[in-house]
Image (cartoon, rainbow, N blue to C red; front, side, top):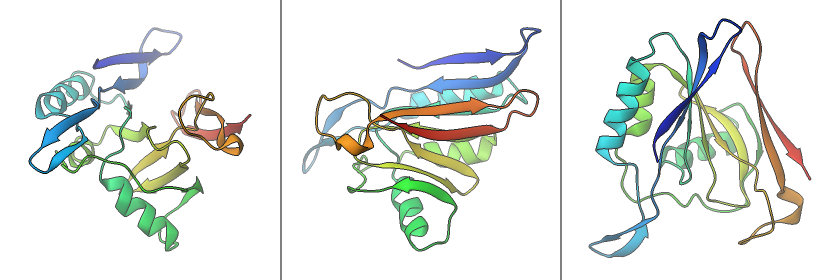
Length: 170
């Protein structure tokens, strides 16, 4: 589902919005079945959620990476972007770009986008003002690399809203 979890301060005022989106699974395209995408009505809902809390920074969480991860990785490998981690497989994104990343840039609220899906990728890279981050794979189900398992720790610094992302390897 799509929902928001607000992180609040000691006065119950929101300091960060964690926005969860359902990136769906697969869909039938003209040339076969491939990964699905985040729909236009979900992007409209995301925009509504962000605009409903002006001046509250946000992070987005969903499963399937956006097409922009490809460009970010290419630029990171070329040494053009700041980041940390590693890439061990191709980005398995949807073949359709519905503009969620561009909407996030336009709104100016979202500082980080977290995804999973590609189990042996664990990279966090700043791309066009937004950090794109693969969460570290947890658990032994599906395919995995035993050296790339653990957790992704997200810390929001008190009073500054600075976000620190760390990989904690098992």
